[in-house]
Amino acid sequence: MKALLVIDVQNGIVNFGNFKDEILIIENIIKDFKSNNSPVIFMRHLDDSEESPLYKRAVGSELHKSLKDYADYVIEKQTPSSFFNTELAKIVEKLEVNHLFITGFNTEFCCMFTAISAFDRGYKVTFIENATGTVNSDETYEMPGLDIRDFVGTVLNWSNVIEVLDFEEYVEKY
Image (cartoon, rainbow, N blue to C red):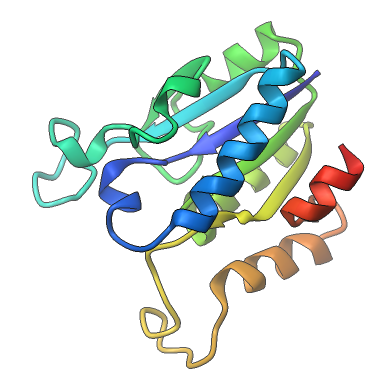
């Protein structure tokens, strides 16, 4: 069985930039999963620091209103990996999931760490590159011209163990 992970689509991230395209693509993938009765699992990153936009008691930590009603499960986490010290492994095992699809935020942290962690646990992993986004830029990393999403997608694809698709390829294949 396949399951969709929607990682950190929270107010403190989504409201930080213009992620209209990413949200639309994620919503279309969610609708596809729902039409096939496949589970949609939302991850919610919570920080203990009051200065963080994802502080656990702040509005920024709440799931973004555009997608939150689609969640079959909401799992809280405190690290980039959706598996570390969370209930995700137990839930996907109970659901007999063997294939995880990765969408959400931030591409180079939580999405990438989760994809690698899922592979390490024996899951088939599909990373839908343009269904991820990041609040960071080439300036953040002092690497002019860096396309973070494309870089992460290329690295994961070259691993030959994580399938990397864009939304159009996902539609054709699945």
